[in-house]
Amino acid sequence: MLAEWLKQKQTQVVLFSSTAIALYGYDQGMMSLINTNYHYLNTMGIEKNHPMVGIIVSVYYLGCALGAVIASQFADVVGRKPGVLACVAMAALGNLIMFFAGMGFPQAALPVMLVGRIVMGLGVGGLDAVVPVYTSELSEDDARGTALAQEFQANILGLNMAFIINILVTHTLGKYDEWAWRTPIIAMQIYPILLISGTALLPETPRWLVLQGKTDRAKRSIAKVFGKDQVDDRINELQEAHEQEEKDGMVTYGDMLIPGRTQWHPTVVTIMGQVNQALTGYGAVSVYGPQIFELLGFKTATAEFITMGNYLFYFGMMTFAWILIDSKGRRWLLVRGAFWLAVSFAILGLLGGLATHQASLHIPLLATGIPGVIVLYIATSVFGIGWLVPPWLIPTEIFPSSARANGAAISVVVWGFANFAVTLLTPIMFTHLSYWLFLVFAASNAFAGWWTWLYCPESGHRTFEENQEFYKEAAEAGTWSVRKVAHGDYRDLPNEKQAEEDDDGEQDGQAQAKKNGMNGEQEPLLGRNS
Image (tube, rainbow, N blue to C red; front, side, top):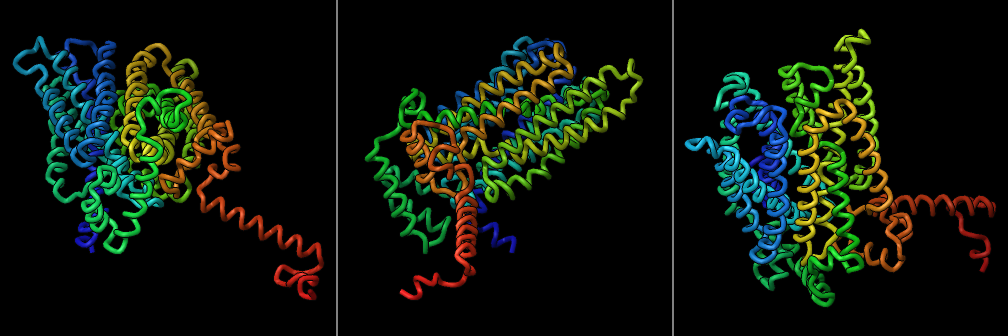
């Protein structure tokens, strides 16, 4: 049974894409303990609390932003599949540069590390832009969210692998050992090896092939992924969509980034999705996990093990993300996730304050530490279920085919700059705000939930073309408020909305029947006599 499952093309696509996304997660976990390794800090010529620690981490996100733009253009011209492979090669090169930083030329260690971080960012940013598009174009309309959520669970698996390797080598070799920080870096090469090995099994996406006029290849791709019986229907749908796009004209970055142009509205939804995800604060939690737990009063070594437990819990709870994202919808998860994150960070702010003043208040550490750990574990799972996947998924569902990779690229660019700011400022905020940092994140999550509720439409269980209709109707209605466009139909998944309308209609019919003195199954007397 397992062998048959592995032979399915959709399974192979998800496994391949999951491995690519796991590479991104690995980097997040990789730097968390490297930042506290004394040999690494001495090699770079910096102190533990120096702003350069944050710069080395955050400059990677600038590379991601640039890599997303380059990779999206490359994937549009050459193909989604070659685009993914080029990004994998770039990430592997950057990783090798990081590994060799300080070897032979210690005086050049810092600039070499910065170059390595940027080059690796180019590759990972490209993967973040192209992989969701690749997956989305090879998934069923009612399963796009599940596929991407499963891949992002692999992202957390990568984060866990990196952190566990970090923990093992750090506590085996010590924080003064060179190989305690070089080993986690070079271990990342397993991902490029796996990805390049599995490339031959994968198809190109039918949508891209139709866009390039390669109809015969598109038919073969459909047959491999969806079955031979679906070739005719799917190829006709893709050709009709392509003909409509040609009639409407090719979409440019100008159409997406200039206010008032045709794709400005979905671009703003894309941008705000990533801005709001950064405002949740979980870029900081992923990279600076141990320092977060130190704010709750734990010693460094204890905080590291608690962080590992948090990441493992995070990975397990991500199962609920791919269970819920298509059954409840993207918007449902985002709004509720932001609410509970705001509540969680508010509680953490209170507990952090008590932990900071525990000596003067005569409060034992466990009285604040244990509740703090529980709340942060819950908050981490809420983020994973509600906010990790939708901001990456939505841009792949709301743009025309000719702009889908560009939309994903804009998403990654915004993600890159937003996380650059968060990861750069977080060490500074640790120093100057201490536990007040939690309250900052409580407020930013409240804003993220409010904006999403007001302006983000539900894109699940709809075709790409149906999602584009929302923005056309919004332009005609002269409003972006989801509840005012298309009678509010895009506040919910279409099947849920229809079920509510059917229930309301049935209840109204029964009420009218009772009013006329008959039950819901009888015919009206006038109609029967006539």
